Structures are given as C-alpha cells and as structure tokens.
Amino acid sequence: MPRVAPNLRLLCALVGCAWFASAFGAAAPSLLGKDAPDFALKGLDGKNLRLSEFRGQVVLLNFWARWVSGSREELSALDRINTTYHRAGLVVLGISVDEDAPRARDFATAMKVRYPILFDTSPDIGRDYLLEKMPVTLLVDRTGVVRYASVGFKRGDERAYLDQIRELLRE
Amino acid sequence: MNFKRRLVSITSCVGLLACAWVTGAAAQGTATAPAAAATPAASPPTSGTPLPDTPPADFKTLDEEVQGMKKDVIDLNKDLFVLQEELLFPSNTQVAVYVSMDVGTFFALDSVTLKIDNKEVKNYLYTAREADALLKGGVQEIYLGNLKVGKHELVAFFTGKGPVERDYKRGATAVFIKGVGAKYLELKITDRVTKHQPEFKIKDWE
Image (cartoon, rainbow over the protein chains, first blue to last red):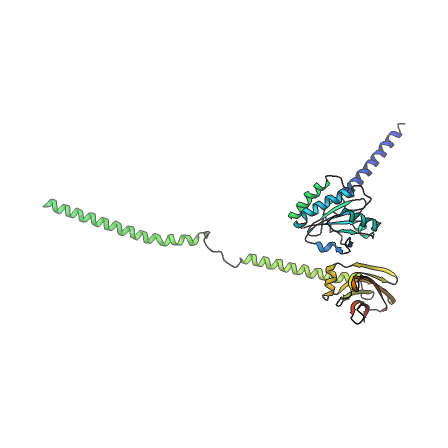
C-alpha cells in the first residue's frame, strides 16, 4: 500500500499535465503571429473566393461544422458582427468543414447568413490550419497575419471577438 | 547791467550744454542701431520666417542610403529566388505548365485539374478576378515540378460555365517527351467561333 500511493500521485500528475497541455494547446493554436495559409474555396453562391484577395482588410475566419453544438448561435452572432462591421472593413468568411457537403449547404441556406459561406471538402485546409477541434475562429489582420484564435464557442464569446476586431480595424 | 550780462551768459551756456547733450544722444543712437540690427541675424529665426525648401544635406544622404539598402534587399531577394528555383527545379528535370485564355465568350473558367502520368499534381480554383486577369492577356504559371527524362502524359480538366450558362467540363491530353532542358507547356483556352464552343489545347513549347 505505501508503494501504490506514489504511483497513483505520479499518474494523477501525468494526467493533469496532459489535460493542461491539451487545453492550452487548443486555446492558443500555433498559427498565432504567422501568415494565414492561403486558400481558394467555392461558396454557397457558386463563386470562388481566395483569402489573399482580402489583403488590406481584417478577415474573420470561422471554421464550423453542422454537427457541432452551438453552430446556429455562432453563425447568428457572426452575422450580426458582419452586418455592423462590414462597412468598416471587416470580412467574415464561414468555412464549413462538413464532409456531407449537400447537408452543410442546406444548413447554411436555412441559416440565411449574409456573409460568404465556403465549403471545404478536401483535407488540405484543415491540415494547413491545424484544425483539431471545432469550431475555430481566427482573426487575420490587414497584412495577412493571424492575430487571434479561439477554439469552441459559448454565448458571450462574440464580445471577445468584437474587442479584437475593433483593435485590428483601428490599426 | 552786470546782472543782465551774467543772465545772458548763463542762458547761452545752458543752450550750448543742451545742444551738446542732444548731439551726443543722437550720436549714441546711430552707434547702437547697427548693433541692434545685427543681433536678429545671429539669433534663431522667428516663427514668421519661411523655412528653406531643400532638406538638410544629412537627411538627403540618409534617405539615399535607405533607398540604396532597399534596392540591395530587392536584388538579393531576386538572386535568392533564382537560386532557389535552380536548386529545387534544375533545368534538366524542370517542367512548367502555364494557362492562357483568349476571348472567353463561350467559356467562364472555374477550375483546372492537372494530372501528369495519371497522378493529380494540381487542382486550382479561379476567382472572378483571376479569370478576368487571364482574359486581359495574363499568363499563369499553374504548375512547376520535376520530371525525369523520357515520355510523359499530361491531362488537364477544365470546368466552368459554357455557352448558355451551362456547366461545362472538358479535358485535353498531350504526350510529351522530356529532354535534357526545361520543358514548357501551355494550356490554351480559345473560342471556336464557327462552332460557338470553347476549345482547349495543350501547346508544347520546344
């Protein structure tokens, strides 16, 4: 019994470290401060959009999937942000990483958001953006550098997005 | 009488003294005026004084140095790019594929997929701006890679909107021989007016 207690403590410490590392890694993706990888994707309206063509504007990239809880709330919140800040130079791009593209299209159509929704059917962009969890929201500054990253969404997170957006728009 | 003479002599003395004082004061005034006039020239210019148009020589040389450094950096970047190209894609194995578009009345380009020796090497989606640039005479390097000397097959698939806004997908194939030097191939999209259809060709630049 005295031999078991140190092992148990060591195990607990290891589990704790692993949890902390994963939680911190998810909250601070390693793309921060680096150039956002370029991509071109087809949108809901059939038009292709390329990220690099928005250089000079602040871009909010939101990677989402239909099956993620809170997707509806997040898409609605981003639509409100887009409506308010679009004229100030903000571009919101929603990127669906759903494998079932037709159902993702139906979902996006039903949501009636006014910003472009793009569909990523290849694994390349998910790999380039180191996507491990969903949803992921990134803010790209006017020079194309990732300045803010957020993993997951809960009500009220949009306030944090707004603080960052205002700061980047002022630059 | 004596009193009268004394009074006249005193009055004339006072008059002479007054004249002498006035003359002295005037002489002093003319002597200080040049000094007063010289003082502002030595002092810094007031706000009302216009500034010179040309920047000081120090700033000019600094600006020239910065411009020179910028030019050096650009030249160095160019040399590094050329060196990188030569190292990554040596001319004996280099294959480059270009896309060009002429007129475009019967075809709106959406994407191009390239396969070399039955292996997909590139899939490129075109935005409206990129397609416009091609229509204005731009030529795009869509692929740059390495291939060994010998016979190879290039297949290109073009998707987009054809005549009457219909979805359109066509392919073009070319068999080419890679020699010792670099190989350049061009995917040409043109309009065939007689058939009201687009035409897709692969041109081998010898």
